[in-house]
Image (cartoon, rainbow, N blue to C red; front, top):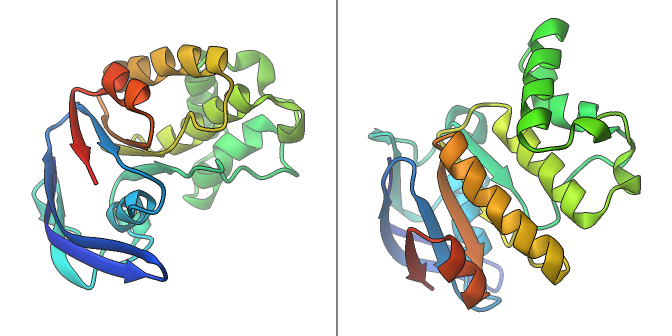
Length: 204
């Protein structure tokens, strides 16, 4: 499903150096490491936000090393969620679908189905600024899943949440992985989080 061959990139103070890894379809793969280890940069390389200086990236057997993000079939949830504060939940989730030219009935159907799966039906017309951290996380996940990605990238998704919300969302993340059968790559510095979620794990 995903294969990295000797991928390297330097960006400011962050470095990914000769990384080789392989993930199979549908697995929950956790990458652990301290702050500054290059975990976020690695996700951005997989997502196509940056291109590697050397090495190759394959998704589904295709060489996507220099593909733009929209051609990779990857959903990416950054650490800060990157939600639009001036839009309500519905329009945050629908944003990418509108850019791709989906009709309004199609958008409504996809957003409602995702909201139901993620337990945020009751939040669809709330402003983002009124949501808790856990609610914002679910909205960000829903938005990433609108494109029906083959790979879901999660950058420290639980780090800013309180312990009770973290516990609840750990269960949700595993449920999403199984329900959508989406290969999930989750980076964290938290060993408990890694062990509780991972089918397999790597350390940077």
